[in-house]
Length: 374
Image 1: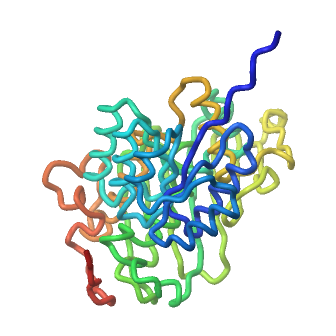
Image 2: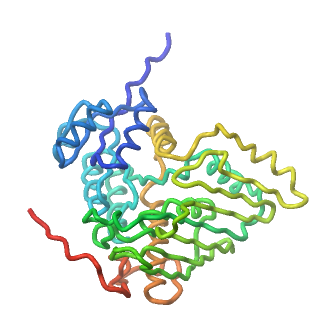
């Protein structure tokens, strides 16, 4: 006799806007190991259309109704950023692991609350940092962990994207209180999360931020110079005013240079490996495979499914994701205060613990205050 095939994990998506489609497609690709059981959206027509397209069995008007009615193994939170932590906490308290789109939280204080609830309940809170899960990144992190490439020396991390003024027509875009920040929080965070995953803890940074031309209350570009605990130095650029869009990472180790250039997701073909003179044999360790798994939601969700099925804690958990969010907070704090910031320095009653703006944004808002209704 053979063991029976386990039933698929049951999952739900809260929020059926643009990014939810990437989640739903990943779930469809991973069938029958995981199935989309239900969706939630305030716009019921959009929710029904989404459910029909991706084969969800049920539609709910809000998260409370979903969590009260469904037995779930995972919930995907794909709503505007200011709702991420409240929805995730509701899921955790219902015993359901939450996979949260970036940014996980709007502030370090909010992130600390999420970490505390996850530890209290023993239920994982996870962040979508899908670039860690492509074949190239997984290979690079293994080689770094093994010490095969030598000491990391220099790195560059560039998210050079372009968004026109119309991008900010949605009333919640470009607002500190809803998005948490500009490209540092909403665009470049995927690239510098991978930078941090490869190089490890950072020790201090000096940063600049500016609103160069877009109708946003937040920055539209930021730059940071970073020192890591291991002595490596890196530059990080986050921009949405760059007409030729690209995403670039370069790591210079003592024995090799490893480079990645892509836009919104990479394949193995987007990586370049260059051994230092005398270390040509290292090229055999790289073994780039053009058909290797790309980065994307599918890769990370597959890893989550594997972990849940094995009873292990999936990545990237809230405590790990906090380190990336702290990097963003330190970028803003350094830029707006005009001083270097050390890791761990934003604590206690520091305003940048409560808000990425820190009450110190040097330019006036351009958007009128949003009206709220109950």
